[in-house]
Length: 132
Image 1 (spheres, rainbow, N blue to C red):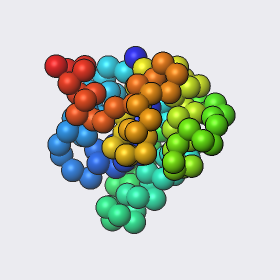
Image 2 (cartoon, rainbow, N blue to C red):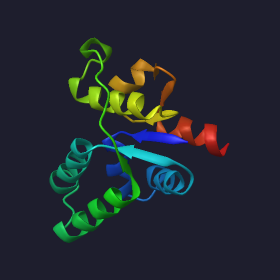
Image 3 (cartoon, rainbow, N blue to C red):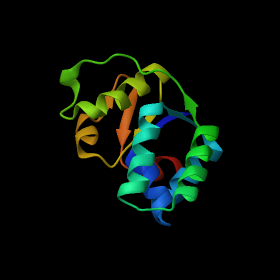
Image 4 (spheres, rainbow, N blue to C red):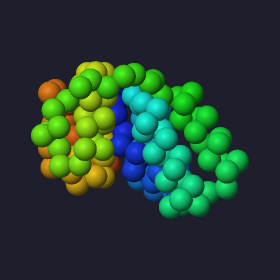
């Protein structure tokens, strides 16, 4: 199963133990995670500025994410699909990859509910659908 994780899922997975870290581990073992360099750049930036992880840990985390995800070019999507233009890349990735799910905590993405055949779900709902 192909998945797109919004950057907030990665950040939560590396910042604390809990649902997002368990979900990330599950996805690594059971799915193909689709990414794009701009998302990875956002993750790195937030780990530095918000979480304030040491540079060496951030470098290891980013190397790991790069090695474990598949980077593709997002499809173009209409700018009127989402309230936040930064989320268009996530939607485009899902379309380009024909992903089954986008997993996000972002309210703007969650409000869309789906794009094409891709369902947009929060971590808890994804967990319930796949593990429940």
